[in-house]
Image 1 (cartoon, rainbow, N blue to C red):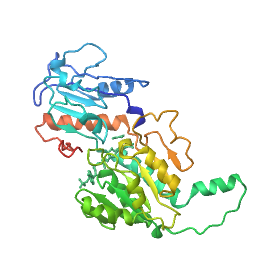
Image 2 (cartoon, protein in one colour):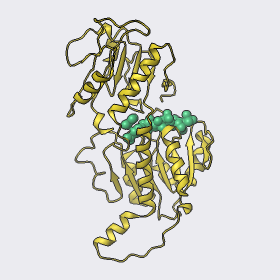
Image 3 (cartoon, protein in one colour):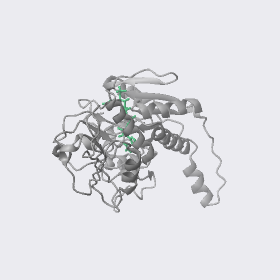
Image 4 (cartoon, rainbow, N blue to C red):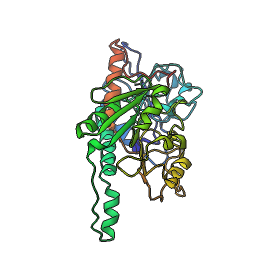
Length: 338
Ligand code: NDP
Ligand code: OXD
């Protein structure tokens, strides 16, 4: 999501089923640091059709804002829009929105997009395979001109565990099953999935960890999941797996991992390696020890970059639903936090 990290957008429209008057406007609100929202504004402007759209970088009438498309808007900003009817979060995870203490009580729609889902699956599967085939070990051996012969376990010898079996977790699971890995999923409800061993809630947590060689985090960040990737969890993963130690891949949120515990676990041997796409502070500060640790792979929160054109279409399709009197889809459950 790197390209959207500092952007917040508000699309302002007209009431559902009401004709749009020339006075109605649409807005694009920006809280930008180091990235320009121009591409987003242009896309929305060219795609909105008869929906008026405001460029929020210019003065506009806050009373006319009915729908907002936003990514990490400044806390308190949305509360200044008295007629807001819905918020379209320009990402799958809504944690950054939900921390706003003044968040208006209107439906929040999150992104569910096949393009984004596929990209996440590429990331997860790519890193699972890289760990499974130990590409890092062979690259190091090549640098030393060593013909390293090692037994390569089959995928079917490796147990992958996915925390968070929602839209993203299930898609990744499907491909990993196809590749032959032993796949398990852990979620709140433990919904069954063909070919996947499923575990639910706190009762299923320890048994899930105990059978996992490569752990993938695709959870939403909520009060229940914050700091879940901590030293106790790392120590609960089996050391006897075929990869010479457990691996963690976190593409959920930085708030899931306790960074010092990741380093500690690598150092004491509770983890073989960690692949981290997300961090509590982003961009990852220059002096963070995570950058240079030999057991850690850092990627810049781009496991699943999304295509702005897809997201614009998605938001506008939802607005069309509203205007046609149909219910919004992919609405967030505020109590659950995802
Ligand atoms: P979904 O809402 O579809 O799925 C969430 C899953 O997490 C569900 O299976 C849910 O369980 C499970 N879950 C939630 N809370 C708990 C809990 N307390 N204990 C156990 N399981 C829990 O989300 P997505 O799959 O669409 O996205 C997941 C996250 O991925 C996003 O919230 C975001 O943080 C991250 N993300 C990161 C990106 C990146 O580029 N790095 C890009 C996009 C998303 P149940 O099925 O029972 O409801
Ligand atoms: C998202 C993200 O939540 O990119 O969509 O992190």
